[in-house]
Length: 235
Image (cartoon, rainbow, N blue to C red; front, side, top):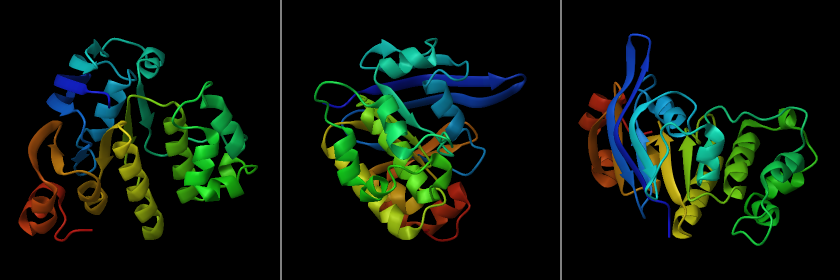
């Protein structure tokens, strides 16, 4: 069973600026996508859920309040983040990155399974983080989160800067994750990724969820894409 994340009236303020203005969102057994232009508060929402910035309101994972907990407690409570920008350790090899988070026992995701899922990482296992391409770094960032075997994983712009063939592989992996019951909150700008992975898409505009629409409807409605996302065509 996947983790249930229930976000209610989430606010984040920096000084006089209000970044999140009462976000409410639920992720249950189906993955959820949030899309929006840059600067709308998507990454701030990820940071607030992970305990990286102060927030008010409520965010519960399987009924347990996350707001006010430190990042370590949030992670131990079953929430994992694939951050925007990947954040590799340049001096650590691929294998060393994976060893840092691999769990004992017989979890669903192991280093062996990561190498089966991403053969390119197996080939590059001895290479340092700074020797990887953008696509390889993203595979490694996703693998680190999966190895924590969380109840729910948040992915912040995972397709950013990836070649189309890698994006296709990413969509496939995200489908596998959700079929196995791991909860997924996907933050994206890429309309194709969001609408391929989830049945519904929530659109964030200036720190609020402005609309939640069916993926098919958004994929086919050029006017809606332009109004909310500033794109005149699907991309």
